[in-house]
Image (tube, rainbow over all chains, first blue to last red; front, side):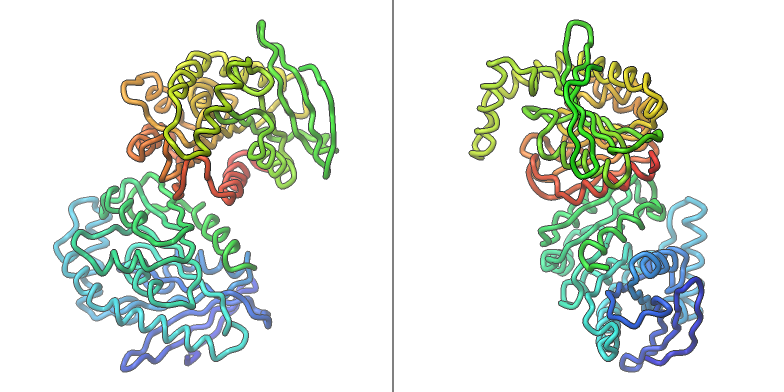
Length: 254
Length: 254
């Protein structure tokens, strides 16, 4: 982990780093209590599609977990996102955002984007695992426990990550649904047995209610709670951030 | 409100009272902070079928809301429950409990009980409203705000109560479902517009998933969150008590 810069605000340290994973340079952010010398839990935040490591909902959750619980938090730019976007990807993301704001049908690029994202899921998982390896080199956060938070694309990548990665012991997922014919996705969901909080929007324009419920139903976890709220895909109520903090406190301590 | 007895434990006062409502004497409990002179919010707890005002889940929630938030809490024996049971009702309730514990099919009395409960819903609503009138005579809790908590039968009675009673400004409901052909139930749900937390058990042996989701969907509230957990009717995880406390704190203060 190469530290690029460090800033502090309101007792929260924000470290901008680059992580080398094979040929890729993965830009990330690490938030932690400014004067924390003791070991503490760390939550990994996987941002949504077209977003990046420092969008307001990632930053807000990160700062809350550090300030309230004394946790560390890490966010990475996912493959093809943030500082890793090509010009074409940037243009597509802009078109997608504009179409969604206009409220009309989403452009066909959505399907191609989704296919591309599916193709890089393995890469995203490898990057999170490299990040966990790297954190393990520093005694302050080597032992975890580690949590994961990611909805929408953050769940698309989070499913295979959490299914394969024993170091993650509690996860908040959501805004995602069981895809018909995707045996791998179902197998990943069934392989997940850690405590889960699953956030779902009842009027999600990208996911059907039935398929969202079916994904939650497929998880192998004994403790899995689904929080359903009215409203569109981008519209999880802010109080669910408090629910996530309470969930992590229960399972990761702090 | 005639105070029958008062006890205090761990800073929590428990007052056993009788409330006269028409010809009925309604036994109730009022928990409050032992040395609270200031106004504070009050939550009304409606217990489930075959239960009473001091079953462990009612007592546990009541003590938590007093200790953590400084609230007052009131529970009443519903019509035909607790100290108001006839010998026949007591025998039926015992049979119902025994059948549920045995895990077999529920006895036919369940249907007759349900019909009887539906017949006394209006009485139950009148008793809660008389209780609110009575609380209004004491400045310490006259102004509220007031919340309601009740699942299963506590929701059967809570729906018409919350739909009609403007003094209640936040409610936790659940373990209930939209009954086909019940226009009144649907109308009550649609008339409710206060913030709601709705608790549902995915493997509820008494309610179908579809009908439970349909009830939540029918509520008129802009803020309504459904928490779904795996498990049977009697099996809401204990952490949902913390979620209820956080919900009340957000809407009633304290």
